[in-house]
Length: 209
Image: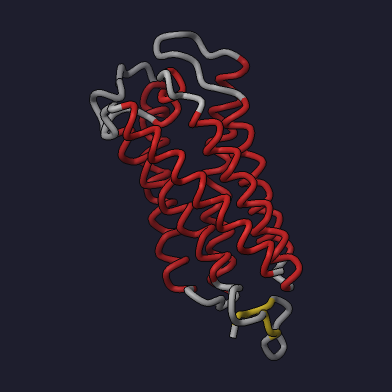
């Protein structure tokens, strides 16, 4: 199991490195430019690379948790997050101003699914009293709050109110979601490195002692 955890953390770390490298090379405004638009930069190949590494990290961590006796819903949500990450990278978004295509639609809804399921997994993991439960709960709450801010502009546009990413810190709120969710994933893996899952008295779900 330790090999799974180390591999998962390594994949997540490598993905983070690829994402940071892309941001440093692109030189775009992180306050207003959403991460998906980095795909149109000459170094845009780093984006699907990072997302695929995140997906691998999610699957490996989920399998480690399953073997440790984690709740089924925690494992399923982490796998769903990993699949969503892969789809985000495999189906790029559309260029700004272009009508929504099938690829852009898959990208958008996979991103929404990923943003939603990781905080849910984090809340369940915290409820099971895992190590770093408080930090996981805080990060999950921040991710959910930032996700609400990400969704609001789309709702506003549905009512015909013109609103561009230059009018709001769309890039910032999206990055808050991504950073906090990667933090939840990392803590989920780190929580298993030393202690082992133990059943609490009368509880159906495991906890980390």
